[in-house]
Length: 165
Ligand SMILES: [Zn+2]
Ligand SMILES: [Zn+2]
Image (cartoon, rainbow, N blue to C red; front, side, top):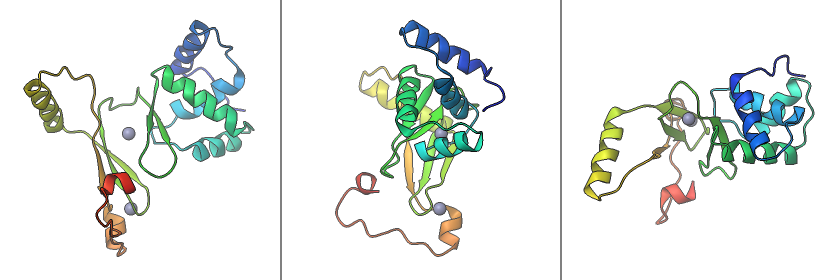
């Protein structure tokens, strides 16, 4: 059992659930606690493992449903890095606007922040008379460690590499 369920975001999530007329259950709070306690990009397997390490046995179906609610509550972002499963990260981390570098060999995700990217977003949107609310930049390739270990980018043929990673 997780020692404390008093993370401030847990209370926000509880409020969201009550607003939706949904019960605030210990299981939902435990799943939310794992996500809010991490600054990483967690898969469902990661979350299940951390719950188990904390003594909570919560089925995957409940974890999926809770993550769905967390995403709908806008407290958590869902990422699809083309690995065949989703990753989750809470939005109230230190860097609210950040981009991702995704290693296609080891799956590591590195965050970075660039004011230049934000300026480009604003300029391109302005050129199209578009009012931006958010953007997403994902750079796929090989991290330094994998390059040093001799990994090569797999031949992607004529397909778009982003679609086929
Ligand atoms: Zn790597
Ligand atoms: Zn991130």
